[in-house]
Amino acid sequence: MVPTSVSIPEPIICAGCGEQVCDRFFLLAAGRIWHSICLRCSQCHCELQTHPSLFWRDGNIYCQQDYSRYK
Image (cartoon, rainbow, N blue to C red; front, side, top):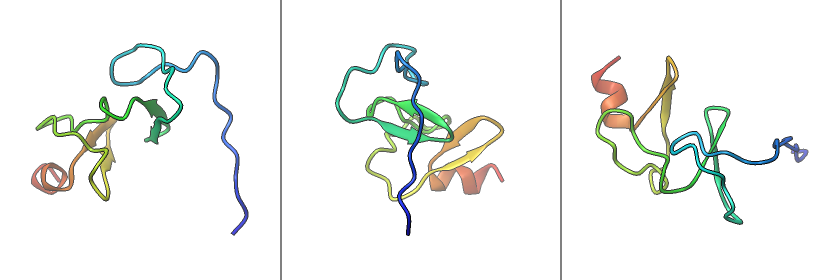
C-alpha cells in the first residue's frame, strides 16, 4: 500500500468547536479536521475518538448505535 498525503490548509480549524487546532495530533473524519474531544455523535454526543468506527450521513456524524437507529 502506498502512503497518501493530505493537504491541510493553515490555520487548521476544528469542525466541532470552530477553534484553531494547535495540538500535535488531531482527527480527520468525514473530510474535516477535529480536536479528538470534539469528534462526537450528532445525536447522543458520545465521544467517538475511542470508538472503532463512526458513520457519516447528510453532513452528520453518528456512533454505530445512533446510525442504526436513524437509517
